[in-house]
Image 1: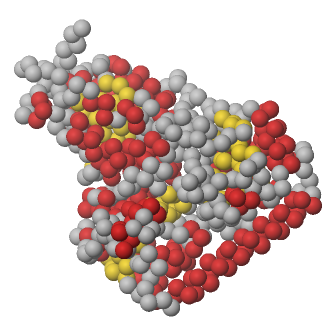
Image 2 (image 1 turned 30 degrees about the vertical axis):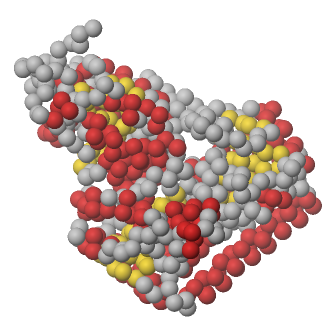
Image 3 (image 1 turned 120 degrees about the vertical axis):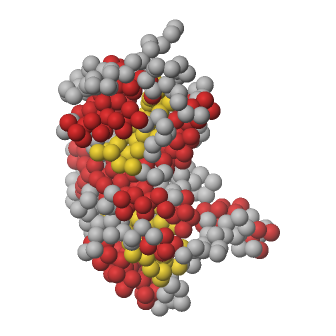
Length: 575
């Protein structure tokens, strides 16, 4: 079927105008763009809105697609509102894949828009091909590149479909479990006249999360009452403040130990007496009931297992993680529900069965409180030892950072920070990298967090490999251009640590181990990273000795908080 031929109406609102107005009317604050030849109708739409005072998202030029997508990820982490990112046709889409897999696995809703090569070759058609590149950039199935990584994809076909299509995109992105969506925009369609501008409120309610099954909650409560050594393992339970608060209350009231294994959100204050650190062992090997709460991988089966006879219960919006091709953790009970409502219902069911002064609970609370205090004392002793070491350790860097930034600062961590040495106590003050591990996420996500919370101190803690992957020149430019003063701390060990550690785990006595596992892992010679931030007007400093770190952090924080400019510390570590 032939497509309708678009015509340009220079004085009439266009599909691009309708797209921008609809996005803003639906609560999208920012339009993060890495533009190309497909953008003229979008640019014209923003210019028109600027002249007329029309309500549209704030346009931000972002000089790399990875940065744009991780910024949208960061804005959502802090604000809970999905944002729009637009990139250039197939080549721009290709550059988003690394961060798109992070968003998909971390259930982050965002609207990824991409231009599509103009359809028409004919003269007289607004938006038709007029650049050499337009032929080579067309694909048979551009969305095929991202289809496994998004919940929905579509192509805009008519100008007056904009409102319907945007509402559908946001509806699917925000329906639990949330995730990114993808929409392609042919240039001719964007130039078409539109009569529906999407400025009215939609009649498209987002589906509510599944409520926990009452019978399943009652059964779980009975199992917890019967358990002598229950254990909660989580990664994502702190995604919302409500869930974090509900977990803290139920853990304290019923003396339930909590392990945060590879956490992406702060599920429990690290000073909470029921917080038992980041590793499942040894509690896992002693448990008779394990509650896996919004956690894709609660332990590494080739390394550790719960004992025979231990009951395992999973709770989550998708407790089976159905988009993971293989995942075979045992499940004696699986409950589909958000963490907050499930924990609230579980607390009610437990309260009907247990008194807080029950001897079993009192004894367990005392034991776990002592264990937690011992773990913190051990960390403090390690810090005292590291303070006089010949070189900086990641534990000492984490300790100094925690003492310098205060409890309200937002920390975005791409791997190196040791939470046991950098206490975080307030929900929404710690965010870790997606389980997909798409490298280069942290700095862009921190910029997004700063965009969402400009009044807050935001700190990005990165490995040197993660910093290189972040396209730091683009990130520092964005920080300067859009007034986003950020503190970046690089834990620089001149290594891809994950590569080295994986090699040594498999071949501890092999030939690679005789070279310390550094083959294809060493990043020496290490660049002077502190100079990159200076090129964008920021403050940079290299730190090599433990005693130098606290004063250097003070200087960097003064640059960020008083001078309102970005800062970077290149901290030379050994680990």
